[in-house]
Image 1: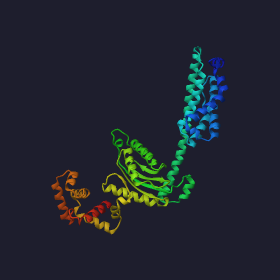
Image 2: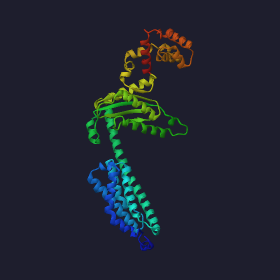
Image 3: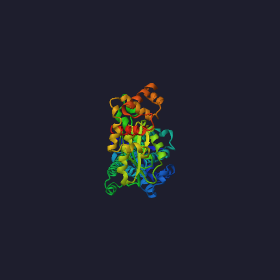
Image 4: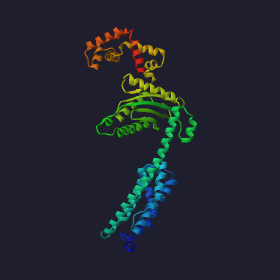
Length: 410
């Protein structure tokens, strides 16, 4: 502090020294600020009374006293003088109080003090009013930076710990490890059931965009996906997912979600990420999770290979294909039924389209952009080479089974 600042007359507004008035009014102002906070924000009414009228009131009082000191000494706040405000913000973060509610308290306190301080200002006070206003803005800026940084740092630490715990729980559930030890170590609770989801995610327009970072676009896609998964039951989903897909375990604290509603949810998920989304799901108890994850991963791979439309699938939707894709001597023999078509991709493609199109030559021709007579010719060639007639209902089960077996063998 310079000698000029020490001898400067006290800042005055409405005929009263600002620093002295602030100190004298601190207790009364604090009570009114707390009353205003409780009226303005319901979340403050939900906090323990001793916290609101104790610790939070103490911080409000401290701010008023500190600003009185700053005005008296005509200087800015030092970092060391904001230590208690930073500690308080970290505690509010730990309690889950939103950051906007924390900052609202500081703005209300400074705003109410300013209103009363300047209420009786006279024209000849303008010079001092301008000085005090600049100091108020600087004090609020420093407070906002200190409080926000402390709050966000604490949240980052907490989220890192929570995410680490969730990853450990996810790994233990999928691997079938001892869950009691993981629960004890992480403090997380096991849900009675989990909705096991395997996902295959296509690229969206952002990822394909020219000049756009595919990595950044993929992360944005995953953030949106995670948020939607968390909303399914209102519980944070355990996930191991990259931009192409992965696994999610959605805790079901009560009854498992309705499948028709889940189909709608998956539709919204696809809209949210802006990409094709194949999802296979199964509900499992914690001990059943490993088998459920393995099964849903197979179902997703199966429906992708079979060129089914994107959406939600479960075992009941693909019973025949799933069973025929199981390793067995019969699977290899079924695939051999179509071996004569090897090296003739136009015949295999037409057969796939013909069966998928409900044996309609017109639909098949439209899907392949060929003439209907071409479809007829190719189906005759399939019959000649394999002995299986796609137009004969008696041969259709074997043709369908052979197609599934061939796809499962790659």
